[in-house]
Length: 133
Image (tube, rainbow, N blue to C red):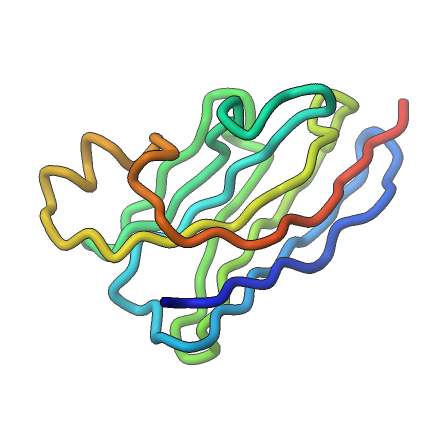
């Protein structure tokens, strides 16, 4: 089991930037699929929205259409840490952001399920991001 701890959230004005970090411990994540999800105010856990993911398969990255071009996911395997650089933030980005990890090894499953919450069985506690208009 891997433990995930997010940090870097906060309050920012529209158009501003934040960088989230997710530090993993208890297990190396160099061979894991790592992702960011978010849960907007009033939404249930089952409605967590996919934001971005980083796969161990060729280092591929995936983004939700709503954040493409504004957010950048990256990872430092030496530090066992995942990042999310968020630029040009808008109020619709307000949410609790969660880091998630999967050690799924079947490439076909990873590619088809990387945007699905069901792929991930390790989750952090979340960090709040609030964007004011």
